[in-house]
View 1 (cartoon, helix red, strand yellow):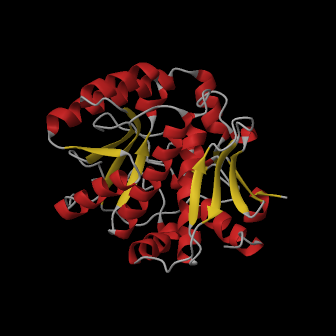
View 2: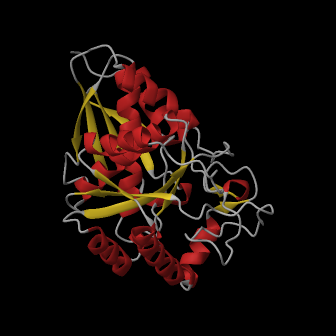
Length: 318
């Protein structure tokens, strides 16, 4: 078939920029090359303290790849994806080449429609439990993208995870450079990237089970404590190479869009992954041979403000 055109690039990039990223750094670029669409990491947007190894950039770019795949598939022009196609270009994350045209599936349509509605929900959730059918959908979503999703059921595994997460959070809070970097991506104005103060979690309180990012000192309303037994999920991959992290990013986005399509909300918990000792402790606690790549808190909640995005023209390369 013929290669992708300018309108395909614009459609893919417009969806790709809606992917999540650590501190909403939006570390991606898009370009057309020889009839294919390429997604690149933007090294200027890598967090030099929080993401020294580039893990967060690759997870974010993987999520952007999944959104771009959906955008092309729902236009009837699906893609064959090659991850890290040229080792001489380390910032080249993926090449999307035209596959055989076909109508989109119902699932692709539903997930694509969820892209603009998905955002991190950092406030407390309602006490309603997540139904068993929704839980199965989330596990299947990760498996479809060659990843795994472990749901922590019961207070024993949940308390163990919470201790690991709180310990990692304490390590990061003691790192002055880490805190300064996070503060630099927290905005009270209408910046096109970073985390708006209004989208951050309320200030943490001693009774909280899980750590929250201290984006602001906004206090929560009386009686609005975080749920005492939240649904926590750990997303992981079989390996931990750059390509595995890109795969995990695609699985993350399929899970998050499935969350949104099911009428649920989610926030991401990355502290246990950012601290190597905590990550290893988490891996051993799961009795998994693979590698945890991110944790999620999932439940029901009111829609809140979404984080801003740069104009799509800012991420297109000629």
